[in-house]
Amino acid sequence: MRIAKIQLNHQHFELHPYRAVYWVEEDTLLIADLKVVEKEPNKKLSSVSIQAIERKYSRLYELTAYFHPRAVCFLGEAACQDHNFEWVRLQIYRKKFPDTEMVVINDSRIADEKLNGISLMQSLLIEPFFISHKPMPTLNGTVNICGYTNPGFKVNSKNAVFRKRACFLSSLNRLTLPAFDTCASLNFITPADNDTVYTILEQNVRKYRKS
Image (cartoon, rainbow, N blue to C red; front, top):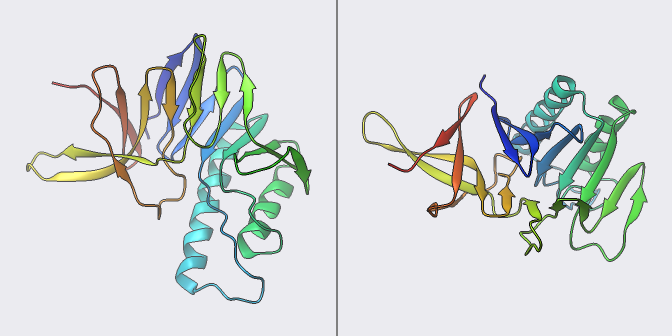
């Protein structure tokens, strides 16, 4: 497994192939679009959906056990509704790691609050970084860390066949994370001259350089 290590504003970040970012100085794991969906309690999920959810949380457990972060910050769509299957899984995860602070960043929230031990916030400013779900404009050298767009990149393989892969996108004053939910559709990007793309290839994160 290869983790890409980068620096932004003199801070260190580790890009993990499980589509997560570890912020070294803040000892915080950043995950975008976990996608805990809203669903009525009396409606049953299909076996395929349940298996996909279980795989997703298995990766989340592995990441938390690997980094042992002080905090886990979910960017968007991770606390939609109480008493559904995914919310129950999130609560089980929280109880498994009781010493880990958990924060959900979702710009649809009207006000900051706390629900079952999980902090729900519209955004989070830890200078010089502004953390949000959707991409936001920044001022005075602040870097926006966000999700929402789920960037994807077409990688040219040896046999000239393009492989579609999720990626991290580092652009001017912004770091965009891919969706943690692997079922989410990718939005393919064309990197600008100042952009750096880190593609996820199986168990590796590789830096893309324009030829």
